[in-house]
Image 1 (cartoon, rainbow, N blue to C red):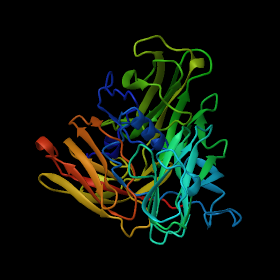
Image 2 (tube, rainbow, N blue to C red; image 1 turned 135 degrees about the horizontal axis):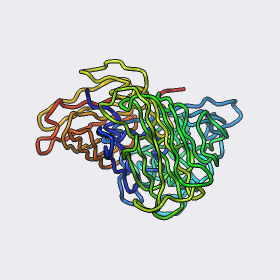
Image 3 (tube, rainbow, N blue to C red; image 1 turned 120 degrees about the vertical axis):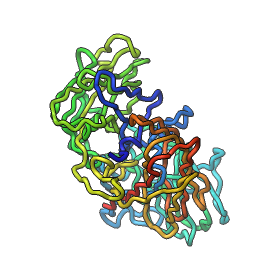
Length: 464
């Protein structure tokens, strides 16, 4: 069976997840981040100098996000009609406010008038912590060949970019404090540029909710359908369990834990054996941020999932009132089309994913070959939209870098794929934006990547 995307996109929180087959006679593999919390986790990871790793993948992408059409022409920002309401996979969002470029600070913390054209200009704006998920978009008029890029203060090449007048798609940035930076290249002094902020407006979506309503497992995520789920109660012990019928090889097991108790530790058991464990560092909102899948387990039978939250790894169970935790099982996308050299969507790779609250579908596979390194050029100079690219290879240890013709070296990381299917990943990936050519290279130190070369799995945005 060819390597899966689930093998590639391992998500580690601040302390990481310890994956072990334990009492289950299979190898567990960390599965991919389909994260609306990607931006929030990037910020947190950068702040503590820890890689909240999303695979070696996510290496490439250019962002064209879900676009919202204006409800009417009564809302104009920076000379453009903007949507009063937009839809993302996470729910409905309503216009909250806009921030003009001239009202933003420069990175040194002062406000300066933009009276003359500058080749390169940076401005910063901070979104305070919010009670609901927030999303952002760029709006501009009069760019005249210039570009505007929006990125987080600590992460990657960017979230969205404008290469011509108009509005970008909308990107989710989570509920936490968000420091955003606008980078303007060759933008005329009289151009109008603004940041538009949306707040999530719908109160309920199709999902299984925690008793207090603060977290939920969606019924469907990135083509996966929830088979079953359970949250800890409001009273009693901090534990929850469920049963479902299915094959572990095609089921993604997702867990969630949030607690203010110092040292709160969540452990997920599959059929009584250890599946994964780690600290309770979840945020309020969407509980799905990836999960664990088991290889070579294709028999359909009944399985039991349990999540237990203790004080420390070996301490007593916490009281349920101190914790919001849950576990859910998701069935794989039924699509199972052979794409290239045995790489299939469905059980081998995901046909549909979510990144920063946006939906992406698998478009093509770019084969990589070479004795010393595996390199691919992706030309996005004329592309109006994004591409999100994951990396797959047979086994070994590798390092990765992505270099843009304008942005320069924007992404780098390392990963190890061992024979058992386990992964250790380095830096979290980001988004590579349109308007430039990108070169992505997998190095092959110490004889790694000896089997089967590798491939880039290219995802296109769903423009709804």
